[in-house]
Length: 455
Image (cartoon, rainbow, N blue to C red; front, side, top):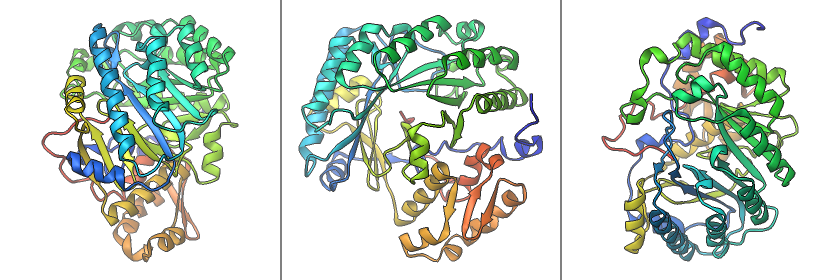
């Protein structure tokens, strides 16, 4: 292996801090209750900004023991039918509150496992959206799939509907790890599904990998990376496993001695980073790697890259309308999150109410800090003059304490000033959340006693 890209002393100093993933600012654990009236007000006050649509499909065939997503295992088609009827009604309610039919620039289906739905149900879900929103042909439409429950016929249906991007969960190809996390997924199965997707005209194939899972070792994970090299996906998302057995009780089956220790976890990330860079991928932000021609890089070059609950996207100037259990809408300065569980979600919609139960309305200070943190996460820079003009502030005075707190990070080579622009250096990109946290005014605020996890 080539020399470490991150000095062990820096990793020891900064890498152990419990920090948000910054898919939103403020982080979702700080949000509080929101009522139906606020949600209606936020929706009715939208301007003509483009829309990104997200639908959460919470169903899975079985439980993957590492999972931190909002999902439920069921074989009840009656429940799935009730969900689809409630989804139809929710979309109709929301569309009726919008002041105009705003242009749609992006559609994403997440889960759970969206391909839990069969071909007819997938077509029905698409029609639910298309009947209330103007969705142009050729739009960026993406879907998350689980290869063991996804057929070529389903991919054909999705291609016919207009989907052009597919994200496949992998996590690890090692059969020992797969058995422990209850996710058996032969390499050949994933390989064949990727081949089918490309033959059907999908323009982008993404795979998700995860380090820090039980029984992982650098030697065996290196073989997973060998498999990835032969697949050559367009994008790779590399996530660190979050062990939260008090919140995700199914994770309690993992013994502490099965989980990689901090040094091994760091080595797994380092191995992945070096190998993916050697394969020609470009490291984008916190957890994404893309081929050099990917439009995420083009978006970053033009200042249009965005990070939200769907990861990194190219639609910076859009509002996000989200549907289904636990889904999160981002409307201007408002975050709105739906009821988490499927049956209560359906009950709220069936009663005529919007299913929104949590959220947050940003203060003027929150808006400034959100903009700054997202600029760091997406563009790896803070442009002091631009932010000063945009918000009418004296940047050095407004962020005096934060600039002082940056000094040790600058001394450690995580970032540095080029004139009036703070730029993230490669070690800082590996610890990007550490740099962003300097500007997080909510970091030490206690979370509400009861809060739902994000999507």
